[in-house]
Image 1 (cartoon, rainbow, N blue to C red):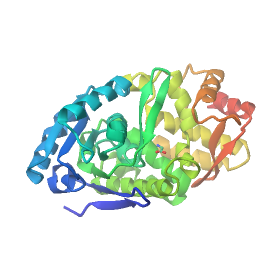
Image 2 (cartoon, helix red, strand yellow):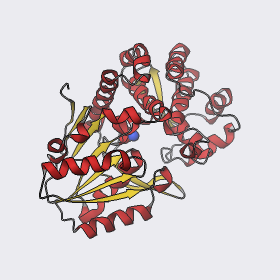
Image 3 (cartoon, rainbow, N blue to C red):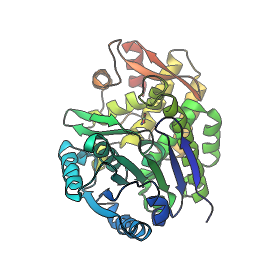
Image 4 (cartoon, rainbow, N blue to C red):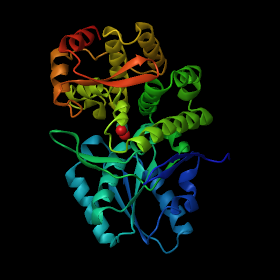
Length: 368
Ligand code: GLY
């Protein structure tokens, strides 16, 4: 087995991201970041049957004195609630978790966000180790310390910045990932190329077939490069006061689509997050071109790459431009100055633009 790839997030609360096949069975590696005698593993009903016993066994062998407990939630975004968060805190209380305890998040973005938020709040903050099992979690949500739960009125409205102590991404877990989730994760991978590096878009284009075929080396390379982009921006701007907001490329449009569909992607009827971001990125690229900031050819090229990766690139039928615009106004990325978008100067170079006129946005939505 080749050595895992390693990406460092630098800064005061720096940490390592390790990426490679079989890491969930490596108890010594999983146990290394644990400082105390207690660990609570948080997972969900899809992931726990596949990996939880193995992780517990590996950790128990490597760290015989460790007191381990499990907290398993049903799968799905609708479980990322204050109620589950409270239950997670009770699980920590029952474990007798002390200030040197660790919460281990084993799963996708929902588990990572919930577990991370519980770790951020228990005794004013304990360690969290992220063990992402979806591509989306490996390249985005497990890195950077955003943690949250949803309220009925909106996603991620209650949360905290709480950097993990370590991230260990076992790429073998991607072999069992449903096809649609793999593609959704690839949308976030494309995003890094779109905002930071046109050369990475070329690399993705030439490796699209390998990525869709789940070639281990291609996936590990795509994850490591994505994490390196994210690590760099997070180290510069951990609390999203500036450049980190560029990671929201495609998200203003994407969130509006997801919200307008009532997050139906989680039940299979609408677009999921990655799919909505794919459509949103094409719309953001088209808006950039409409405002004369970038070329329409760049937007066409992005659209073709996303299509090659099996992602949607058009607004789903039945969603009205005016309704989507109204959703965008309520998005937490809107500010007092009005609608704010991440737009292109060209492929691989994005910037934050405020005060975009409604008519231009509506024209792009109507064409999209
Ligand atoms: N998912 C965007 C960020 O972590 O900032």
